Amino acid sequence: MKTNTTKNERTEKMENNITSVERVQRFTERVSRAKNIHIERADETQFLVASAADPDKFHEVTLDVDGDNMKCTCPDFIFRARKLGIPCKHIIAALDSI
Ligand SMILES: [Zn+2]
View 1: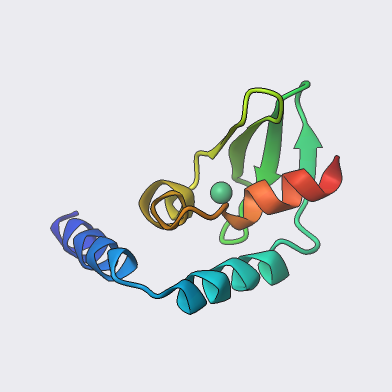
View 2: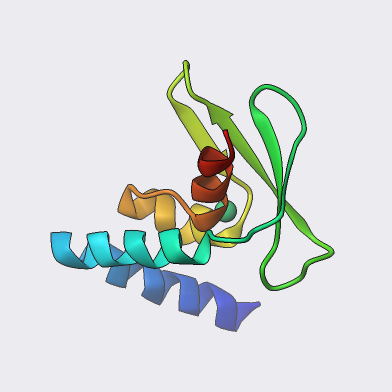
């Protein structure tokens, strides 16, 4: 796990120094990866979105559109996308499904 921490720390440093153009590129990458993702809507604000890495695993997406709250349990959102101020592909896929 030490390797992961170091990698995440490196990633975090990198993400804090990206340009606006790179931020848009990261966003469009995620939009194209959001296509054809399997989604199940659990209730008004909760979605289960299949993991691309492991189709047997699901990430939990919360989309509270009225409350301006969107989050996902995936590592991309927790370690990268949220810090970039962009949604992960699961959030994009869930938004696209409503
Ligand atoms: Zn996600």
